[in-house]
Image 1 (cartoon, rainbow, N blue to C red):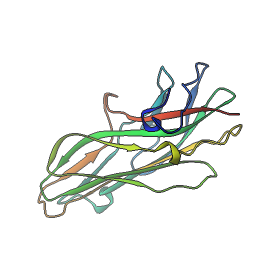
Image 2: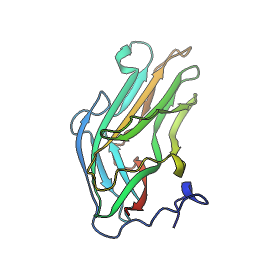
Image 3: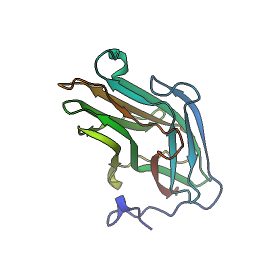
Image 4: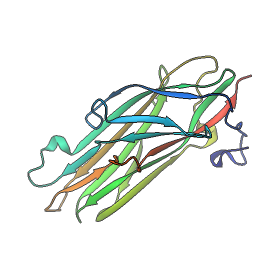
Length: 196
């Protein structure tokens, strides 16, 4: 069955039914201190989630400029069954924003396999004013999806960034991609393909 991104173009394969595991090998960056991020595979093997617990950028009076931009790089190992490879087809980023009128904010991200081209960042402006959850989605057309080379075990690097500037606002604004209760997750949707 085709994923939504591939409908009408190239058919991708259903997710493998064999065991799949995912491991967070390393994390680095001002938005994810050690122990503040984790990953988990979905029960149907169609996606995995990343959960952050202390990922927040903020700007405003008396807020140090170093707090305006936060970033995180996750290095993830996906153990897929022999004979299968995968690409990232779609990503749903979620968080909470409290943005004063006049402030600006953005979320940006890219992902690539170790040893391969880094690719470009997808930028998502988050409109102010805001006092609510936000969501940003990257959808990769099947022709542009980068599959892990068959037979190679390459880790997936995921780079994300949150940025807030106070602009003309006069109070503190912030943007988070974290969740204290695990309810806000970034979801990475797989495209699976059999190796021939």
